[in-house]
Length: 164
Image (cartoon, rainbow, N blue to C red; front, side, top):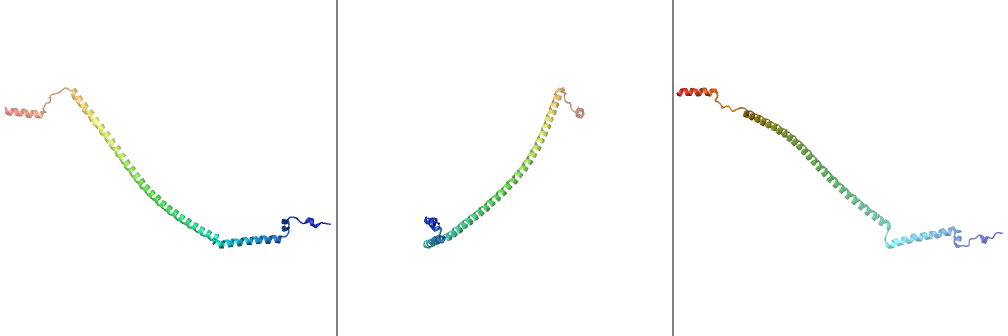
């Protein structure tokens, strides 16, 4: 014969496992007690985490929107400053180009004047040399007493005759 007493578990947990309906009912009672205690706690404290979360998220959204507006304003300010800088740079570039043109013109004038001064110096040197050579030839030839031109001599002799 088979002994049925030997097959039955001896521990109390083993007996609970044999009755799944009782185990499920106990778990359900624990779950209902937990939900009830949470509902009582919320009603007693007046704090509802969902509304706090909604308020916190709305505040976060408002802060985000405000930060975005500030960023947009700062970006517009930077754009305006950048445009002013670009305009000023363009003015400076135009002035630089004008100065380069004036400088090139002045350099051309200076070059032309330098060439003219060099030509004048050459002419003066040529005149000096010719003057020096004329003096040198004059110094080499003996001094001849200067005589009056023939026309003056004729008039002078005619006057002497009429006086005498």
